Length: 65
Image 1 (cartoon, rainbow, N blue to C red):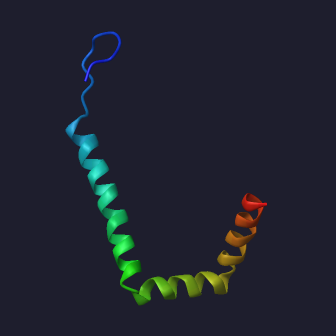
Image 2 (image 1 turned 90 degrees about the horizontal axis):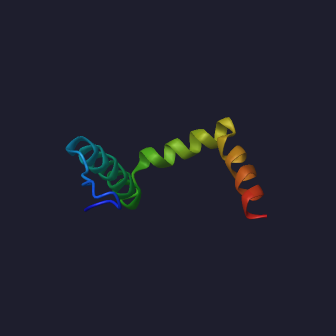
């Protein structure tokens, strides 16, 4: 691909590798949630006990209002 100045735009291999790693982490997380992994349920329960879910719901209510 070329820019308006005629320079060639290339994606470095390191950047492509980092992107692939980040995407694969998201895919693994979504797969675990889909398979009803108990660790995520426990994480949400502990977050609720320490008040993290109340904080998140307060912030979300401000966004949707």
